[in-house]
Image 1 (tube, rainbow, N blue to C red):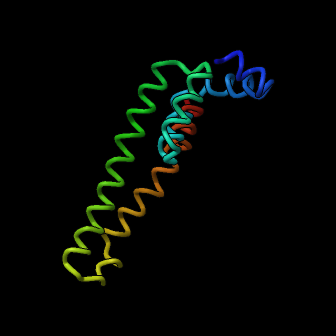
Image 2: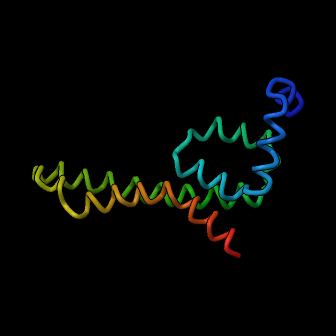
Amino acid sequence: GREFAASVIGDRLRKYDNAIERNGFATVLYLRLVYFPFTPMNFGMGLTKVRFRDYFFGTGSGIIVGTFIFTFFIGTLKEIWVSGNWGQFLSLKVFFSIGLFIFSLFIPRIIKKLKKEK
């Protein structure tokens, strides 16, 4: 697996390996938060030097956050649909759920900045 990928990808795998080894948690968390398809990511991470701890906690954190955001947003849309009050699309709850989604895209950058400050 890894040797074949290295022969196909070449030096890029080594470059990605070094970056992922240094920032494994943030990388996995970011990929989970940008809602990258899980199957290709799982195979791809298996080819890198990501530490199991970083993969485990990055995946868990990303899935929890993503699940909460999607559930909250879809639940809000369902409430609007059931009530038939389409004016609620401009409600604070809808904007808050969209804001949470946008904020989730910046969480890895925030973590990276906090790591650099230490």
